[in-house]
Amino acid sequence: MDPCKNKPSLPRLTTNVPLLQKPPNESCNALPKTLPDASAPAIIMPEKPSRTSSMFKEDKHDENIMPVTRFESESLPIYVSRKSVDDSPLTKMKKLYYEDAFTARGSHNSPKDRVTHESVVVVELKTNTKAKDDAPKLLSDFAHFLAQVYQRPETSMLVTIDQNADLIFGNTSGSAYLLKITALSTLIGPLTNIHNTGLIQSIIQEVFGIAPDKGVVIYTPASEDNLATNGMTARDEIDRLERMDSDNSPSIFKSISRSMSRRMKSSSGNSGPISLTSVMNPDVTTHTSTSPVTSGQVPPLRPHQEDKKKLKELPKSEPMQQALAKDEKPERTLKKRESLKSFVNRRLSELGELTTMKPFTATKGKKD
Ligand SMILES: O=C1C=C2C[C@@H](C(=O)O)NC2=CC1=O
Image (tube, rainbow, N blue to C red; front, top):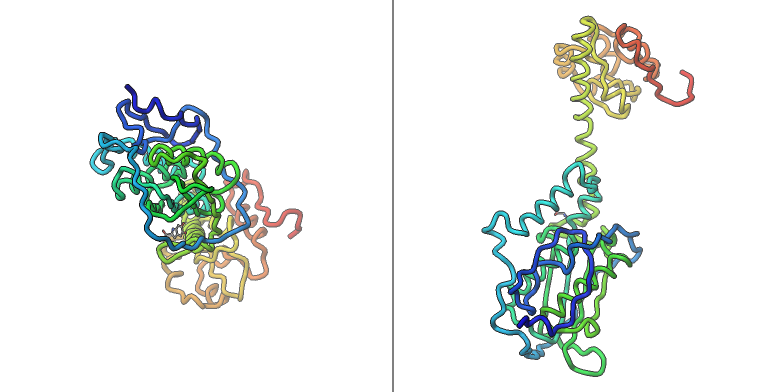
């Protein structure tokens, strides 16, 4: 006889993470490997961040063990070893997660999205009812389950379970629980909470035998400034990644510029490259930049490698006029009063084969 038949059926809830199949012989008391329903469409979506932001404080509690007899000793291990099996469901799930998060088809590419996607989720469960599983296993399995619910690596889950809480809900001292979940505001919102409450309360019912109406779930949104780990708040981390992104973007321009330069050289033979870096991003100040003149220190455009070498030798603070004096081809430089637009257009017309290119317009509608 299926021991699970007498249990109330779990709500058919949805998730947008890959779900694992429950083995037919798995104990009804064991924490399921998977979320309840893999077939229905996802409803988790980013929600408007809440304005509130606070981290809950730890409550003090005294020991109060209420032994529970409902859990049978024949409960099977809940999860296959995740460390030793390469194609374990968790590995597959992680693979899908990382593919989604870090490839072009993923939508989590901005620093904020990246941090949000891996931000810590803190889950605190207090109950007056003991589960059958030993604490480490219970914790690990619960963390695994919650990581699926919140769609993040398990390394981002902080889970604490107090099975000896002094706790009363209503006027009876029967089994009950309090579950607090703290996460970035973007992970907490009306739809997400409805969805996740169903999932989590179902699991708690399976594992602890406590009905959803005997448990309370509190969701606490934290702002990026109020959630921290590894010596950094989430805000710090977003800012750091944003700085890294902006530091890295000029090199992308540089490499495009280099390949453009090679193509132009091979087709014209007598012209130097236009720095795409500077054309695309006038604020970028590199040695090959044609940035708008600032403080009279704009170094010349360097079309050839040997020019580049020379330029490297220029002291960084060398004034523009001195730099020009050393330049063999000063006409290729951005003259002090010349706008970027007219400079680029002048250079384009110098490069005969580029006449098909549209003139560069630095400022829409503004005459040079
Ligand atoms: O609150 C968070 C803070 C950080 C810092 C960063 C790290 O791993 O160093 N990642 C974070 C995620 C958070 O949620």
